[in-house]
Amino acid sequence: MAEDEIIGKLQKFLNEDISVDNECCVVYLMVELRKLLDHQDIRDNYLTLRFYCDWTVHIQKDRNMAGISEIAEKIDKLVPRNKTLDSKTADYIFDFLRMSKLRAEMANFLKANNIPLGRLKEDNDWRTFASTLGEVLSGQPILNPILSIKSIELNVFGDGSSVDIDFDKGFSITVGKGIDVL
Image (tube, rainbow, N blue to C red):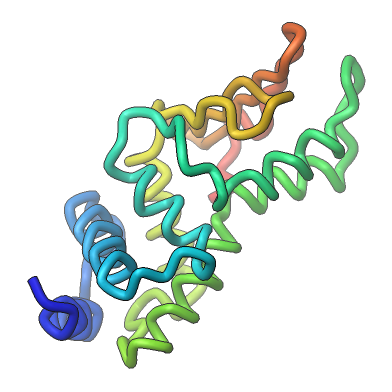
């Protein structure tokens, strides 16, 4: 499929009243965005967007970590081993759950391609989209994003969401369990 056709499909899709709480719509959007990224062969830009697009369609993410390595390195530096998390660190991990960096890159990429944000520009709709994407990604671990982190796993429950992070040397944390941070 040609690049212009994908742009046309995305323009039409995002101009419609898409269902941001429908997994099929969310997965479709991520797949079409990935196709467009591939057509444009943009390797060094939109690393977070590409990462999430890839993560959406794999049962585990175990390669091409450029879009997550910066986040993983900051988490590694912020998380005190064998101590309680402070609010600044928990907020940073919650920001990962909210997919704030994904939102910014997606908005920039869509704008660069003259594709409207549609419902995704509204905060409530973005939270719904992020929650639905979180449900898609739930149970699909990111493996070995950096040397000191063995896995990062997003878990979405009926009553909230959490991130489980397993570090090297047997240390692990869970942040957000039982609360709705998306």
